[in-house]
Structures are given as C-alpha cells and as structure tokens.
Length: 406
Ligand SMILES: [Zn+2]
Image (cartoon, rainbow, N blue to C red; front, side, top):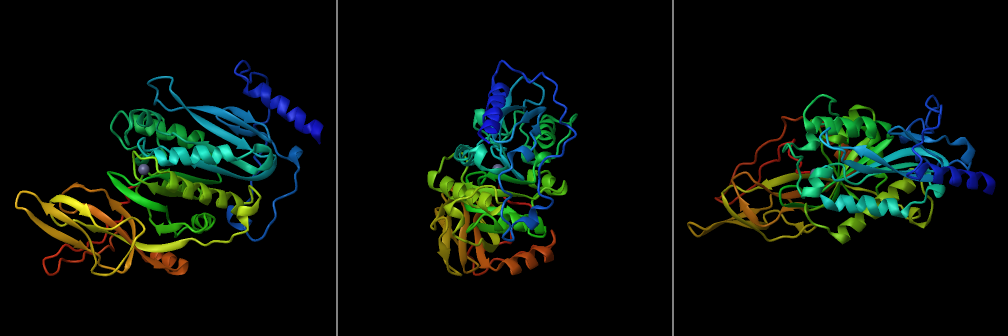
C-alpha cells in the first residue's frame, strides 16, 4: 500500500513540476470518471466505499490529468482572448471514489468574501483523505477582481452570460471557457456571491427549490438560510442546472468587504456539505442540522432621498415595525419604511442615497421545507403582486422575481 502511495506521490511530483509539461502519451481519455450514478441517492446512510486507491482513475480537466490522492493547480485562460491572463483552478482528487464538487467565487470581482471562503475550504482538504474530487476556482472574474469591480472590462455582468459562447462578447467567451472547461465536469456546483450595489446579505443559499437535486444539495449545507429563487437568465447556477448539474448560489455578506465571521459560517457549511456527500469524515458530521427555509420579499423605498436603516442583519422584526427612514434633505422631511410582515432581516442596503423603488430591506418569513417547495412550484414569474401604500407611510412592494441582488 505504501509502495502504491509512494509511486503516486512521485508521479504527482513529476506532474506538478513546472519543468514537466505532461507531454508524455496518456491514453486515459476513454476512461469514465469515478462518479456516483446519482448525487441525490447518496445520502441515505450509505457509507463511502473503502479505500481502493487503485480503482480511482486520474481526473481529467483542462487537458491535464490529476492522479488520485493528489492536488494540482491548473490554469484557466480568462482574458477572453485579449491576453495570456489565467486564473487558478485547484483540483483535489481524492484517493477514493466520490462526487465532483465544484466551488466557484469571484464571478463578480468585488465580491471577495467568497474568494476567501474557497481558499479556506481548499486549504483544509487533503487529497489522500477525501472521497471524490473538489474543483475550486476562487477568482473566476480575474480582471474584475484585480480592479475591484463587479464587472468585466467591457462593463458586462459575467453572471448573465452563462453558459457562454466561443464567438460571443468578451463576457460570453469567458463564461464559455469556465463553463465548458470546468462547470460541465462537476456533479454539483456552489457559486459564492455577496449582496450587490451596497447591500449586505445574511449568509444564505439561493436555489431553485423546484429541482429535487438542488433541494438535496441545499439540505447538505446544515443550518443555513435557504431561499427559493429561480434566478435570472445567464446565471451560472441556471446554466448548470440546465446542463443537469445541481447548483446553487451561496450569498455571504456585502461586496468589497472581507467579513471574517460570515466567511467562517460559510466554511462550516461547506464542510458540512462535504460530510453530507460522503467526501470527508470526522466529528463535524455528528451534528445533524437542518436548513431554515424562508419566504422572502424586498421592501422598497417609496421616495427619493437618503436611506438610514434602523435594523440589523439577522434581526427579527414585527409587522409594522419601522425598518428605516428615507430623508429628503431638500425639504427636510422624512418618511418611514415599515415592515409588512413578522419576519427576519435577511438582507439590507447600506445607508445611501436612493431613488423610489430602491430595494432596501429583504425580509424573510420562516417556513417549512415542504411549504417552501410548494410555494416554489406554485410560483410563476408574473405572480408577484404589489402592496399599495397605506396611511402615508412607506410600505412594501413584492420583489420582482428576477431581482436577486446577487
Ligand atoms: Zn454576485
């Protein structure tokens, strides 16, 4: 056994050496990757297979082969053809068979919490101890990350262009390179984001709960807030589920901030998922925790002015409670924004100048998994209704279904 491990390590060292470009013939392309037949069926008390390193084939990605029980950093070209810029893809290929879990972050270049979450998760894993494969891309939108902006240099939002196209816009080309080169090889995918446009989100999962495999993936994340969201066209998670890969968005905190306590919450949740999928073993799997499902809606400003919040993320609020004020500094007046429900603040805008209709507070009403799924199935894009204003105070309007502020 040690001989096999030693040989594998030696081979791995040869492979990762920068002087060896893996130019020897390796006719392994025809071999199928070691994957479970169906991710959904894996969690019913099924123990991972015993260590049989010799049965796991090398993992093929981006034209390279990663040997079982080893880790390799690959280059993904993400300039859209304009330069040689590439972003790292870390592959941790376990010595035992299991699913391929992909972790993506930094699709919006200013959403840096996810970048650090992926780095921490990857650094905690040891290839010789995991079952299956983790593929981690901490900075998908490299140019956006380097410039500290959500967008690509062509001012497009990368997360509206998946699965992309080889001959499309720059955004479409980069989306294609990532989707074809990485995402298509995953059995499940988690995409990390934060709130957008100066909004902050309590750590939460956005998922299309109408899809059983996506719901099952969300269940694996332990005591995480889960919201149904069908998403918008071109989002990575939509393109992935359309290709048969269960995927969800994990929202953590606010853009352009590095929030260590929120980052840790997500790292714990991903470790829980790795346990749930049978990819790692250890003590954290003993604690069985369930996700918490919410029906949610955005409460909007009904006037232009300066928004000042009076609640905190995660706070529970009463129906009719004042959430904040919109101040008109020209007339020196102010109007209250009140909660239309008894619920919890799942997301909120930072204090800033706003226009009428600005989504200010994202409120959730706790519900059961069953009810959340029933609501998701019943939900149609046109069904969002408007709540009118009452008594001269600001009140809510149901959020439009495509506004996720991810
Ligand atoms: Zn985002």
